[in-house]
Length: 357
Image (cartoon, rainbow, N blue to C red; front, top):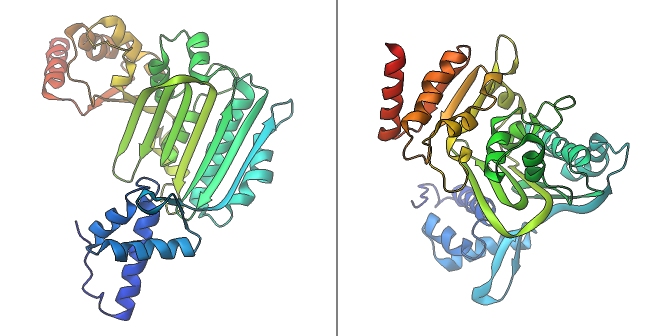
């Protein structure tokens, strides 16, 4: 789609169009570092030479950086503030002190809703490194450019997925990701609610964890979300967490909490379950034992949405355990489904029709 502006022939119109073009570059340059000029030319129906002039202005203004030579140029958003430091994890280390003294000063000028999300996410993740990783040190990276904030916490401790597997007897890393996304998962229930990663992942535009050989990312926009789990070799030691959010994000932390709470008791009672993540490598959803893995801890919630995106088929035993046996045993938990294809929906109707008789 080509951006057109019927007022572009006026001085004010040209200024507004130029501002839109440069905003487009800033929003997409990190995603398309080597093709941003061509992408901009196509988007706004202009020559590559004219698109390059807009990129050059951003470089001159210190908002974009360029590296390489001629056709090998790669562009990126320039850091307006950036710091990389190491913390010794010792008794008394306070994540809130680190935020106040080291991080918040680098992020001055952010809108209140974005600053609140950054503070919440950073302190939750650093606290995890302090109290759960067993590492001696944590490294922190804070970067703000003209478009977004990136916060990263790295440790070389046990690794979040390995610790969950060991302490909560989980089969593999992908199932550990599934449990984290479900919420209320912690290796220290006496001291922690297990809500930090659940809400942090949903508040930021992009949330990523790399630990061992498993890379997990949760990305969201105003209209959609994307969840991915992949393997990375060689395995990474410890845990790396990266959080990103745009300056102009409209998300409010209170809205994120409210989405998963009952208004009458104001507590974390709702969750969303990404069904495909509950399968170990190579599995299909056919057995009752797989269903019980999927259903683990659902009784801690009042309302559960099962997202079947990417699931092509479920077996009768699996469906019966989820949609007949579990509701019969836990009538206070409401199960909902989204993104079911015809085969999955048909199997659900098959087993629920039996329970209705």
